[in-house]
Length: 389
Image 1 (tube, rainbow, N blue to C red):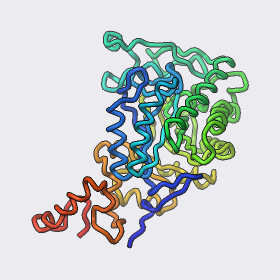
Image 2 (image 1 turned 60 degrees about the vertical axis):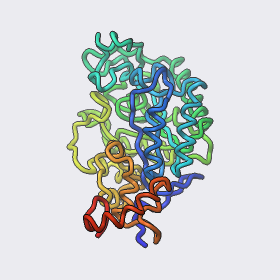
Image 3 (image 1 turned 45 degrees about the vertical axis):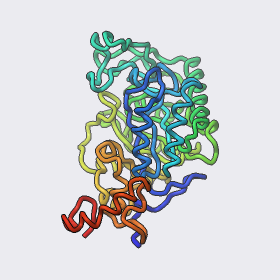
């Protein structure tokens, strides 16, 4: 038997992941009034059937004004629990850990759905009924020219938002999720506090690095206190802003250390997004381009990391883990291309047990595929996708 790192189980607090593959949160912009629906069930359910260790629901808004677009999923009222619970139940019944990311978009809220332009709302969006709302931020600095001017959060606003995060966390637990991620990346609210380019406050929440970290860490403490002790908590960060004068890796290491001290279990190491699209960063993009961030945070902060960023191939993912760069692998858009990526990776890495080739697949599929396999090998030989000679 072969035991690749990618398919070794991992226990985080009281939760055991069957492998190291996490399906990253990917916004679908398809909710109505924050309510998840059948699209989300099928979209996320495919990944659980496909063999991932954990499947994470997209950025889920803790308040209506915290949505990126009108199509975002939310958890700001109890009525939003039931459809998300249906999804969590399906994910768990199919062998994966149900996970969810909680978020507030800050000054990048109230924007277009990406297929309409991925920019500030315009007359075309208004004609479709997507009207803008007042956005908020650490400082009254718009995301870019032509974007909404944010309201600078007051002390009362910050207190109210902490309660929104607390209640959303309780609802996530009630909905059956067992792995929660706090979104501190991609130019959204908590990242806006962390970056000196978007946080120009002169009170205790702005200024030096410690002050800029203060509010995100308060939210982390609020979430950790509300989240069941036996369930893990991840924090997604933009490891670098990729803009002169912005966050660098040393800032992210310092933040990761403080997050760990407050009960974070994993740092999900992305980058960029302070301006422009969610993952925009002025750094070279290539295979595994964000993996060095995961390695540095892991080594210097002493915390488990999740590596993301153009990790497309099974051996590539295996090499990331085998090299000590990270503890978990996040698969995003490649899972849209191939929802069965974990199962195919298991075949490619010879990570199965001594049973049939398709024993790890859902029985409704594996039974049929196992019986087709001998005929395929006679017709086409061993050089089939994901199959070893």
